[in-house]
Image 1 (cartoon, rainbow, N blue to C red):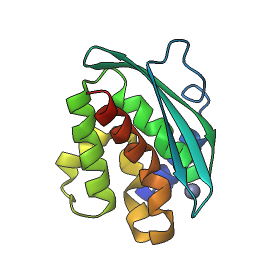
Image 2: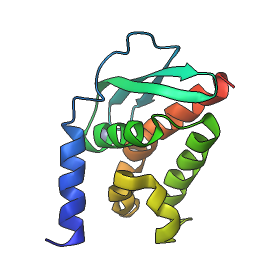
Image 3: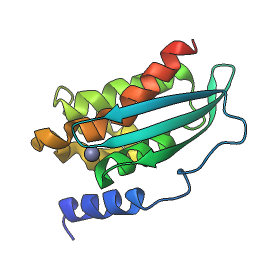
Image 4: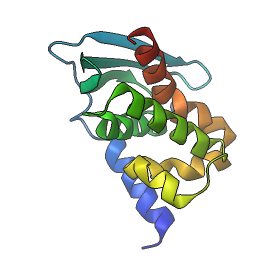
Length: 143
Ligand code: ZN
């Protein structure tokens, strides 16, 4: 199995992951993300405990890329501080814009590295970054 096949499977697996797609019982913050060019519409729910993102989940609809990207993001930001999450967001967006290509630096993105090749598909870039922009908004409003 080559790397792009593994990536495709990861995206598929995450787009069907229902563990992260739910309502949080005690969300402290809800932020909507909308990508009209594709129709992706998500609502990110977060539970902050001081500086830490204790829990995260989402609801909403969209294409496989946007759903997978949101689920991957939730996996890696849960338990992280706001500052760490902002660094992850910056790195993910840097990867999609091809401004960060160093594999060692991208490793912190874990499964979300599977979305690297989206940078070759301009029409899907907005789908991939939607959740990350939404999280950034939420963190900036709750500093
Ligand atoms: Zn989309």
